[in-house]
Image (cartoon, rainbow, N blue to C red; front, side, top):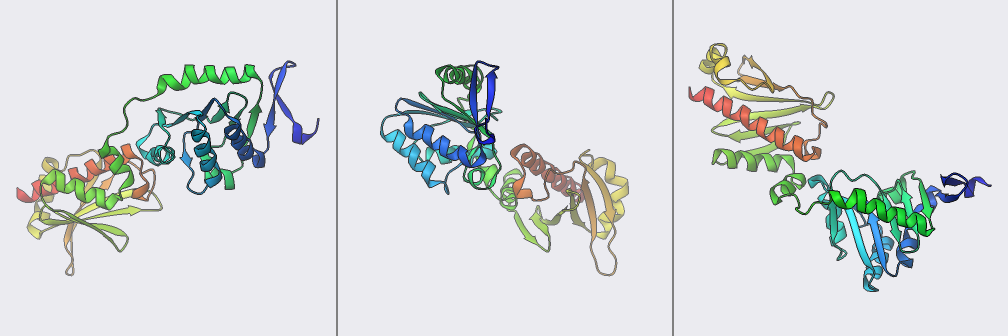
Length: 298
């Protein structure tokens, strides 16, 4: 048996399914779609077809000839773009929590693969797959969907607020969050490698060390407030998420209350934070701002 036709055994000595080389996978997936007459089941956590028009056209054609298409994608607010891609084709995206499996089959053939339905996976990634053609194999895939995929399907989608946070730039989301929490105008701008935050009648700065993924906040205080910092620190600066210090200004520089955020960020690029971490960080920044404002008011 040649390397190109190497088979992997499902049940030793009884039946085999063909290993697909990276360049063969997309064509076999397309063949599954083109040959379908009754149904298609597509399981791909992540989907992006804007630059994969051949696959998008095949799905549209299958829908047009009356094929029932069940399209399962990963349920995650950060993955909203995937189900939007599916629905742009006029198909329903079925959202499944913790989905990582990738396979595609019809009533006549199927492919199990490491490949998501992403144009980048098709063009740039080294993937592997297996082709399935026997009815027994296809029945096993049907059973897998019923036992492990459908039971984890979500009937409710992420909220509009969560979807907004996943798509919006961090600076804009922070500006809106502060304004909502304080019921006052806020302004967040990015300049000289840091965010400047103008809120609650004060100026704050947010900086991320890209070498360590550490975040730092600081706020301008008067000389009188700087003098009271040590005595009032334990009253107003209590969040365990920050290590608080005072940087006394000299030679015309402002004194600053500084907060070193103790958790290490997953990425230094705040726009790329996943939703739970982004929501937590917004809340912690607001805690710092409120602590400073309460300290100054006292």
